[in-house]
Length: 137
Image 1 (cartoon, rainbow, N blue to C red):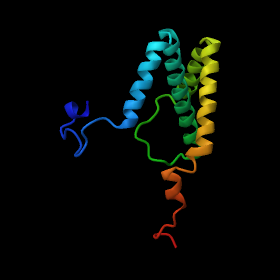
Image 2 (cartoon, rainbow, N blue to C red):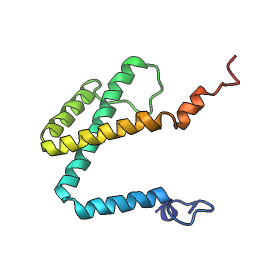
Image 3 (cartoon, helix red, strand yellow):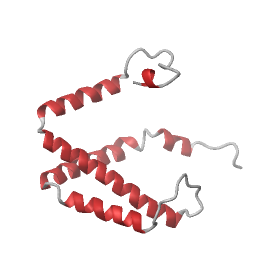
């Protein structure tokens, strides 16, 4: 896709998709073939809604905790817009089937367990933050 859309074409030395991309493609194909489409649609919806809800909460939190940060855009109607988007997302999530909410909660719990047992120790960002900086005395 990048080769067709990007003027630079394919990155040097790359002949095929990475193993991770191929693994994700196989996993998605298996899920699409084995699970009912309405369940997959609801799982996609709850993931998107929660992501949008987190962004809306983040807008409010950052406006309060870091008001001087440079911003690429301004939220129109702040704080009404993020509050309404949070309420709208919650309203739609509550209307989803309980099994969808339960599976999503299990998925989030599994991801948090993975993050706190593996992700923190292997984070490149965390490793960079603990290395001593030469520009600071």
